[in-house]
Length: 279
Image (cartoon, rainbow, N blue to C red; front, side):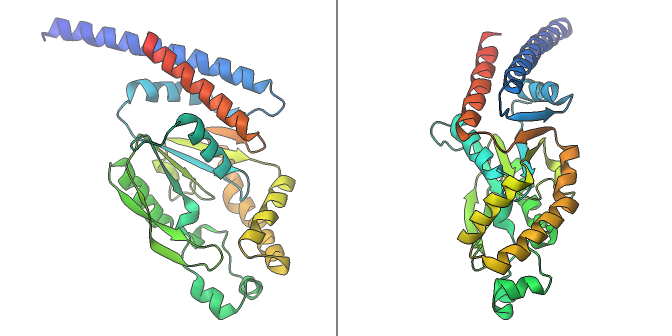
């Protein structure tokens, strides 16, 4: 291809890209406007350049692996959001579309400390905390996320919340187009720089507290042990997690109905598919 033809090709290609990007931006703005009128909208806040950045990534970085970090306080609804988004995106599970990496899997093994203390109550009274970045192996998590972005397969650990045992031979995670990672500290300073999209799930504290206590029972924590840990959860959230609200690309409503998450996700994907096939 000669210089003139190449120039014309690049001009035409760039023009088509801009047409698609413009159509995607207009469509996403329209969907967000409709969402804002709901009693419980999914999107509470979106950064000014977020929609344009998403559109550019979709069109101009087709071969790139997208790492989406989803954070929020304990029991805010991060896992629910991720799982229902996936259900809307993938009708049948196929390799190469998405991979989920959960921060909860990377808790450090503290079974020895629990046994030595004799109970969760006694362990918490020593000042031990499960709710600071130091309780999670964020270094290993970062290593695995970077490897996945580089098209490498990893094996995530598996953590037992009742016994505090971490099994290094957990689940095999294979490379995919989209890597969803969720948890308390996925936007910690140790990880945030490798995220392509940063999402914060916001839920009122009274709702978080109710959800948290219900889940604590399933993890073997009741009575004073649960009270001690929730006090720590609230204090550490104030210090470590809530500040990441400010650096997130979008704020998601943790109170939204599961079905509505599927509906709006499905709508976004269908519209994007129509645009990319018609332009």
